[in-house]
Length: 277
Ligand code: PAF
Image (cartoon, rainbow, N blue to C red; front, side, top):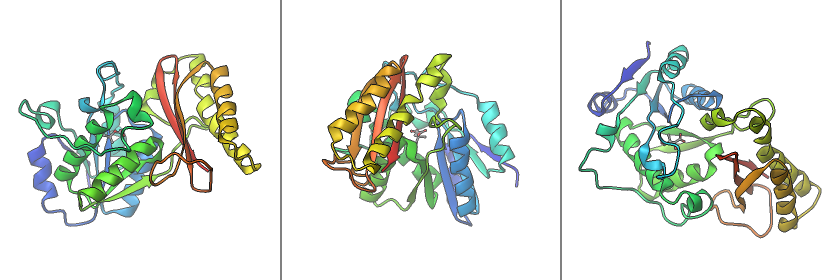
């Protein structure tokens, strides 16, 4: 089957009102990398039909953030999706997604006010609203999301659970470059030595895991050793959080299954990463 490009909500709804088979959905903001492709391949393995959306959602960017600079390459994205034989690519536009009379927002409480939600107070409201809209339009059986945006994954699972949405949320492992940098469309901003410095996120996570496996339980000691690595690489720490992987609550003690999540700016580029202990 050739990849079909769908540009309007009404066209997408016509198709999704009568899916004959199981449907996997991968929402993206484009500028696709191996992380996205691995989500798509998983969706294709699990389902007969796969839908990928590409939409740079203005509502999830703060006023000082990189909406206008966000990397875009629609032609290459569509080529990649056609090579993978993706069934449908949904490309809505701002006028349809946020018409002038738009008034309704979806907001998950508490877990959006910690970690990334502190520096980006309106971000998750934008994410939950757009993903809710996309799920209503595409009507998939399963949505596939990467674990790199771990807080986003838990927030969206919570939305789907609380609103009884008829969709399963599947989190998929982080895909890394060969040296460990978590794949992200924003890595394109890392120029020259910043690319190497950005490895400090993953290196600090690996150090934390090593300390934990050696029996260190003092979280302030682990945090300060992580901070050293990041500061040596000129990283500006937004947060380092030791969290329970289901509730996102900060833990006093690490145990198997906890996550360590962090956000760090390298020369102004905000990067996030996390690791399961
Ligand atoms: O993770 C992303 O790329 C975005 O937050 C998403 C889920 C596509 C919503 O715009």
